[in-house]
Image 1 (spheres, one colour):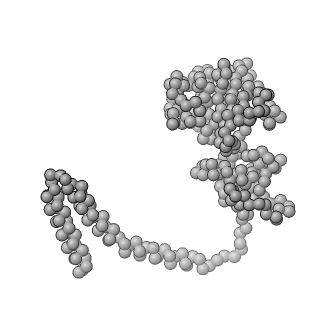
Image 2 (tube, chains in turn green, red):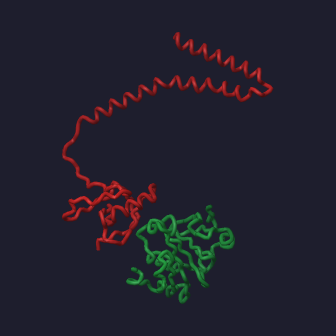
Image 3 (tube, helix red, strand yellow):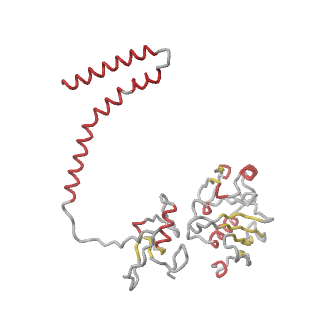
Length: 148
Length: 156
């Protein structure tokens, strides 16, 4: 709701999803002046019944998945606030802002070094992956270990 | 304005953290239970805890609301009493002395049991082995040593 009241630049909620509150699709445009300027992405938010005490499952979907060192080609995102640093005071808006900011700070478009291995072996749910973070975002993504 | 930072509704049974952030007590309690060993303020990630939040009582809130089954009541406000109790420290000291003497008395028994029960366990495991008689002989020697040691302790 606050996303409609105070929209972020380049972030739009899919209008016709009132019937399913547990699955949201967000359309996002790369910020101006960054490597992703003019690109369109779709983010999928899946909310569990425990939301907001449990983090939503956030993945990129659709034809264009950003090429970024923390985004796997299956759409999984390595971002600490989506798992262990989640807080119930975070909203769809703040998560989108974090992801736009993560994309904007990128200096070189490339996939994570362990992309092909991870995509073959990972669980469908990115929250089941045991991510290894270094600071706010994982820089050692090749250490990402699959849980379960 | 006075919205809970978790459920985004007007805060019910409001509490405020030391870092100044407002929550419903049921919401905050559920969050603290979610990660009991890593209790952080949802807004600013400052350290937070049940004892470190202050309830907010508005005007006319003297009527108690229905106690919720799942959530314990809000922590009470802290009032420091001006009086200082004097009897308590002496009582605590006496209790400590009792514990110490008990520990020393129990020590030799523990030592004996741990030392002399090991050979018996070994023989029971090795009864089918080739060294059956030898083990039995050794265990008998240990038994005699143990008995003589206990006798010596009793006499001395």
